[in-house]
Image 1 (tube, helix red, strand yellow):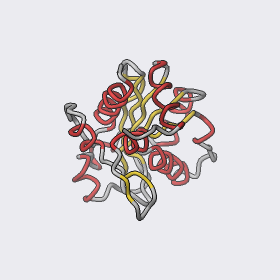
Image 2 (spheres, rainbow, N blue to C red):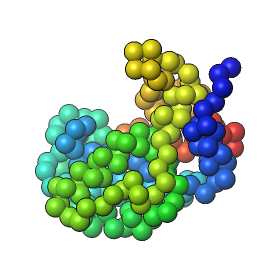
Image 3 (spheres, rainbow, N blue to C red):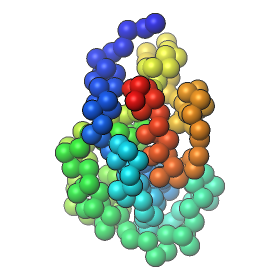
Length: 188
């Protein structure tokens, strides 16, 4: 068995304290995307936020095929400029677990930019923890080329841990799967 890094030990201990939130987003794309759905749950799975978000630009068909969110579904949804302050109020100063934290934070920054709203340094608002990176170390599939552990998709990680996958590519569904995964990893 491999020795766990200090980062992983810190992550697992944080999960065991049971004072964290889990966040997930669905977006219009991987690179210049905007958020079209965001969810936040507490450590017990209590829903603190679950909302569609109307993007400034449209939802490409390839993104819609993944998450199933259409233009019609977000037509009456609030924009990111309305949602962002609410997100900030919920996550401020909290331990925040995200499966691929760097990506979701990037989408939050890009959503801000699309609205030309006030710059928010999301990294400083909460204590971000990446469940994907923690799981990659636990799974232990080393990539010599990159000099790091291979990332696993959330649904793959759930399968590998014999956990049920449900509502994948839905922000709330992904939050609840991430929550189940990190609890199992921490032995709670």
